[in-house]
Image (cartoon, rainbow, N blue to C red; front, side, top):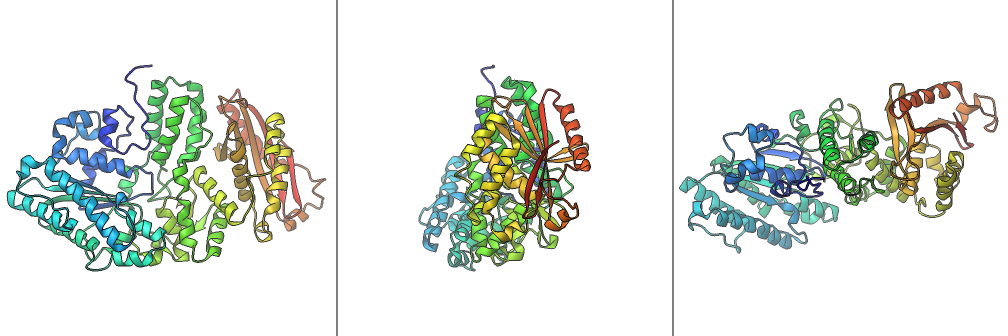
Length: 575
């Protein structure tokens, strides 16, 4: 292995550090030129989609301070080979509002001014050859006043313009919303407040051309909507299709990244097919502008996986970054006023993995009062990255990562025990791989806990999703799982895939779920004990096996059809 091998730098949001440390980087620089045609772009994406890294990249590109390092930083990128006239031509003020502390309004204002003034001071000091000691930053003044001083100096001394980057613009405002501090939030965005004054200063600087452009990122559009009277010059590009792939990874980008990783770390190429399918199930599936467009991977969570994979050349036991699970707190906050709303919303997604929405409501702007309305939940969760476009009429959970998080919350809401009594069943399955006994244990220990109202609504999706969650909770040391994997002849419901580096290597278990209500089952005119495997179901699963054998000719494949019947019970057939 080469000594200058590239590194997986998980959670590294500094572009310069990634280049200096020889880290892997998916080139998104072609979007720099596109952004230059947009006045004051506002681009929103869920947490952990690479917003901060993109902001850092913009700073390196536009800052005069990085002029001597342009070739080092961008020589191997698209923009390095196709630079725009604005490269390294601006003074850059890069603000990160995620570090603004929350509390009461006085504490927030003090922290906001402190954070902004430190960055303004850094800008002035590192560009003193231009300012020539003509201005200074007064820490006792508010950020707007100090920014106005800089803007005025740029204008009167004809200095290079400011390029302003605001990362996580809504972070501290969102913390107020999450913390039920609605009164403080409304004071924060009221007319005459420090936040609107600051954004008015930005607007004034743009109008006087002392500011070249302003790039703003965040998660939710609420705060910027509330600031519209002070900052009505922003261009929302969140839902513009030509910017959809600006953050997150496309399949082609992931393929290229994996090509490099496999080559650099000398990973056995025979594992590639398994890894491709695994990461696609876990981290892909986001569509932000159109349901017919290519889906995107959550970039930071994929890097979380690759960080382990490169270090140990094995699949990690836990495929969900724990930082992602904290997002479920938004569900609790949104539905907090009415616990039944939370139950109904989470149950809907667990049962059907689909929720209807009004596409007209999916706009770039809405206020905080809309955010908490029951009918608006799908839109709110879309912006939070928990739901993605399914079609024009519905949204869905994007991948297995999010499905698992929602099933866990479903279990919590309905007080279903998933942490005790299952160990014996799981241990036995690892010894004998008897799926009939495994499903019987799930039925006795899990399904028996369901409230009657939920049990009356269950369907095939519910069984495959909850059975998957229970099995992955206990068996993920030995197996990964596919849910609704596509084959030429259809999609399988659930698959167990033995990890190539564990004792179950090579094992593939394919499961097809069928659900009948009591009324539907009565048409068969037989009892469940005498019920026979249906020919069409045998043919269906046979089609999946054919496709699977073509891909994995050496796999040890077993297949099952599981019938679940109303409140009567279940029956497992080996097909």
